[in-house]
Length: 622
Image 1 (cartoon, rainbow, N blue to C red):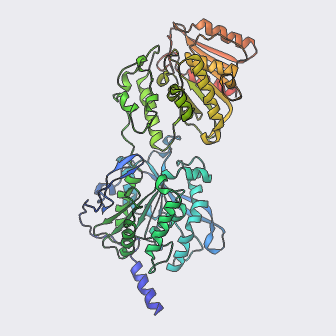
Image 2 (image 1 turned 120 degrees about the horizontal axis):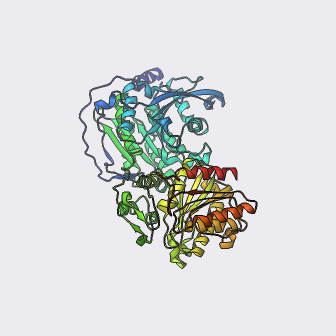
Image 3 (image 1 turned 90 degrees about the horizontal axis):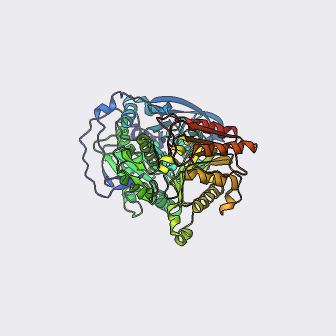
């Protein structure tokens, strides 16, 4: 009797990943629940249940921009047989242009095969690899890294009962070996392969699988929700309790519901795209699972949807369609970038900059003119570069869209309530390399406003490109209040250095015009003199076009100014640098013939490139 049952089971499950393609009926978009989901700040208006959409035929052909598949061997453990050391293999897809920008980070998708499958088989199907290329090239999804892994190893048996034992232990391989091996080599959003950083980047990680790979995906949700936000179980249900023929649907959904509640997953975010074909030989477990999930109020469209492929079989044709439909929900292409024609008010009011968009441009708008990024003008400033303005705004937008915090308050709510002017303060963070030294850039504005878009944001962005962490401070105009805010900002950075990922040794202060006075005062007198903590002084001050003349206990100082500056006389600055040198401290000044006040980075002028020489000065004084 056992032999008969086993034979029937094998026949039933033999319709696995490599089954032949079948005719496909036209699909419709009607569903039972019209509520939409919100993913990564993008409104996804899909019903909670419905039908998948066909993959366009041209997506199955070779794309112009093709990704690359690479074999990755990594050290692991044989968890099923005592935990001995073994070597496993995965295959990694990197998108076209992957090596073009070393600072670019990528979302990542892990895929698992079905019964009897192998690592890399998702890429063996050329049309599916082509589809990945087209999804990226056509802007349907952000560029993505895809890993085709396996729950088998060199000691594994691929018979059905042995396969169950293997996938039940896969989550350990994923956590301890596969994920660190892949994300230690490839540029994902994980800052490092520490458990903390892998968990912190969960919003940029997805896991999907077909057949027994779908069962594995459900188990990944049960075990690895701390590491993964998006899940794509394709033709399979959860077997946390039970196994094939003993699905225990209610017990499994009870477990998942409690897991969601106990771990605040509604607030932290998760999304499951569950899919199966109407002609799938083992569809009943998926349908039963979906009905039970949909009967619970906790599994809203924001967290769980169930889609079917009309006429879909238990084959790779269906898998391809599920991937095509799910990936744009997981990692949609970012909104259209800002341009020179974008209205400044649209940037200020962009929902991505929730609560602080108004601080990107001067709060005191009387010192600003122009209504678009391209025609922005700031009082007392020259050579404002529209391309740089656009680049900065798009950098800030892309960082927020990628889940990175870019703005930090330096005062508590109680302090801001006691002094409402403190509502107009904070730090914009331009990230460099984790653990790199930091700089704080201070814009000028004559103690009337903060001209950050020309006088501190560009500097911070360029420093971040060089790998340094840079902060641009928004402060209360006024010499005393500005210095107090800078002291508080430095205290905040030192107190949160580990969280921010910055090295506090050998930091630098940068400033132009009034901001240069801030940097010079804090550099010589220290943060404690303005209400901050007793902190080490900066390794370097970089000061542009300011008539500040005080000298005393100054750190190494680099300065630059133009000879036609009607606000900050270049001779005053030269005299100060000479005095610092006379005191035995390293100091350097560049005087640019004919340049007026407020040239910023000096793009398109004889001053262009000064920032690189200032960085070299800082580096030699670290």
